[in-house]
Length: 252
Image 1 (cartoon, one colour):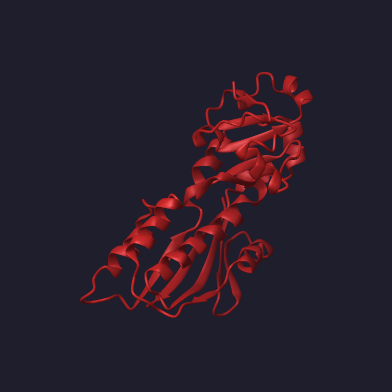
Image 2: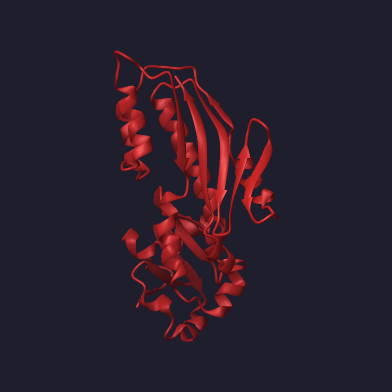
């Protein structure tokens, strides 16, 4: 059974890939819920103890509220965001990791050329050169949600250019748990060819790959009705499975 008090959040990251915060009076209503038998989701009773390292992070982010479902940051397992905001926030964070990686590798400019959003019902693209969305699937769009991602992204990152720091690049991927990302690691390998250095590379980066598994996991669990109402939009988020990717030009 995965119910913990506010001062005993499990240290093992795999036991808290998602966290549900409940009031102690809610515990009886969870009897028989799928939540109690999940090895990856922890139910935590409020109040949280700020002396606990993980609880301190959650309190500091203003997330210690009854009925909130939090998703673990795939790039830093001690940080959390509300599940409703996870697709957009983690997409932006992975792009920032890409930009930092390019800086370590001596790039001069990183430019986003296109943002793509995929859901179970449609694919929508936004070309940054034309500022015009291109949609497939249903006619109605969710341009506001793509714009929310765009507002958080720097369309261009410019650097002064430098010699590659491979140790820093590899350390970044290790620290953000992206060492097995083929696209990102291949960029390091391309830059190692000192006798014929890459000058530009167009890449398509999946910004949601790391969050797919936990969304699939949560989507299979029946959440008590009062939690879905408090969380707001939970069912839509799980049903849509919004995923983002970027077409990016890296210039050295």
